[in-house]
Image (tube, rainbow, N blue to C red; front, side, top):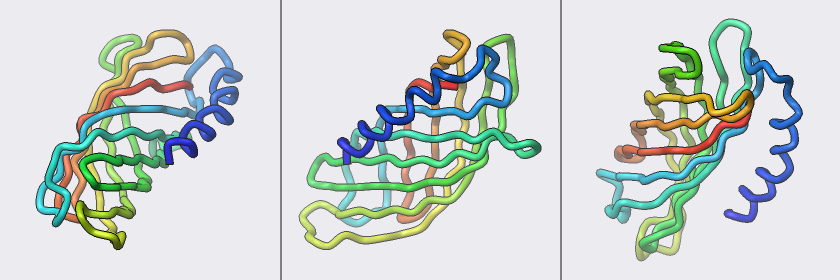
Length: 162
């Protein structure tokens, strides 16, 4: 899975750098790392490291449509999630935005000490912040709550290429 993320990142990064110098209306590619704090999921009880990426597509009226993939492989658990969400933002000062988002998830996971993978659908809501570093590079931090299966709280930080 990590090879897939790396190949995706390497093939899409030139698109991010080829954007114009203005970031208004630009599509985004983001990479992030963080921690997954699961609760109520049988066989998934430990705090887990997580990594992944998102693609953001600017829409005309509803903000940014984001599509993401993230994965963890630790403590005997494999947990992969595909997500789709809508994100809005509020500019608090030049180069600093507060973001809020919500959407749907598809989870494909293998609990600790089990051979068979399980699937589950769910939802997520979250909030965070973005800070502009250069015309095309932003830092982003998120706090994301996911329901289904059980509940998960994610603390995420990463970079965004616009």
